[in-house]
Image 1: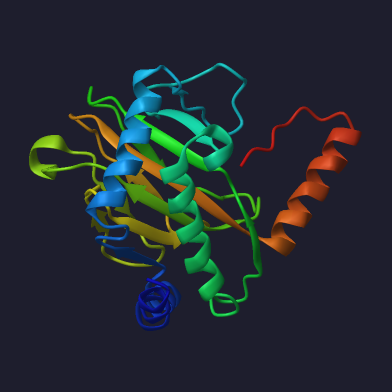
Image 2 (image 1 turned 45 degrees about the vertical axis):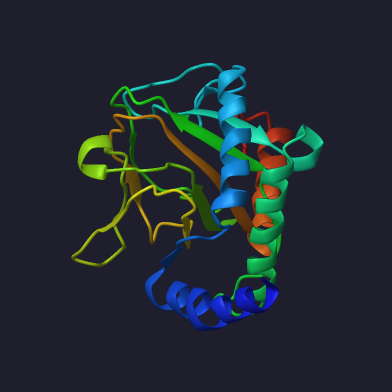
Length: 233
């Protein structure tokens, strides 16, 4: 697996990200491991662990479901008894480590927890947005999809990327065991189109060390001056 990852990163992930700003990998974990991740996510959903996703900058507990319709939970892997998700995180970390020094000028040393997300299939999506519009440190977005037998013509739920300065869009169907990577900044505005079946995904953000440190400094300065603001991963 490690040798295959090294080849994948060298021949595909690094050149595609640097040239196009996005890349996706099918059959990332394999069906057996993917099934284990799926069962953990489905269990989190069934026990009521997911909560309505919040919009950046909004007050706690406030949600505009016509803008963002997913339900989410933050997962730490083994610490939350999610062992298959922990394995996924370890493999994502390996991919990023193998990319070290080759993704533009990014110095990646940290990542977010895993954000498990479910669109409940009631026609909700997530309007066009940018993951990191304000320089909060996020540089690479990784999304792992868990939807078997997905038919976008019936089920919807496509992630559409609007690459900056390009005349085309990129449509990514949320297929089972597919991993999508893209730059988190303003180069990749994107949306989740309305989903008409239950749609599961796990998102992880990797941070550029310098930008993350600068963002934390800005946050501390605003807090010290009494400004009411929020800073979340």
